[in-house]
Image (cartoon, each protein chain N blue to C red):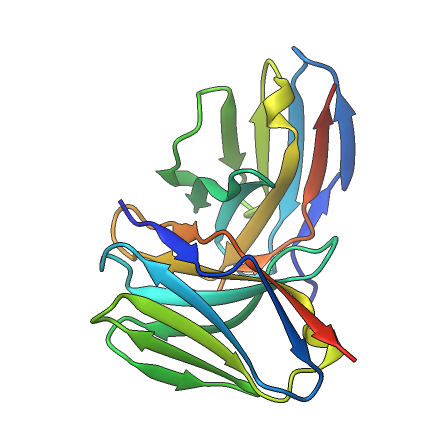
Length: 113
Length: 112
């Protein structure tokens, strides 16, 4: 089945710098890949998604890159702010009969002043 | 538009008891999914309901069950609670097949 993971459990960046959070997946069954942000005491919050037939998608201060050749996904956050401190999850979603989100283990992003 | 709401937010139960958690999706959303989040296992899919029918189910024992009502509100039930059921239970809603699922704040269940 689908397996989604993350490269680093923690990441610290200076305020104002760019952040890159990485994620790897094991097979190509997902139709979408999604990034979620989870702040302490809250549920995951949708950030951005990308269809499996795309390689890049940009949002407000965020860019997701998908490299299907090496089965790798990344989330880039520009000009990281203190409010970006949270746990970030990547997830894969298949639209077929087994439609469900499969989450990676999460990366704790800490923004240093 | 109001977000996904879950009740109760916190719950303490004893082993062997049963528990029912409630989720109210965003107005107009017909799909409700449930997830269990623990430090050891991360976020794991429990099941998804769409128009009162269970559409998908994760790899959890039969003690975990759910249902959805005609107004799309959903409940999940865990019977014969075990210590390992202590977790944050999250509910997410979406309009249909969209990837964008909106999560509630979760119910923190502690089993003693």
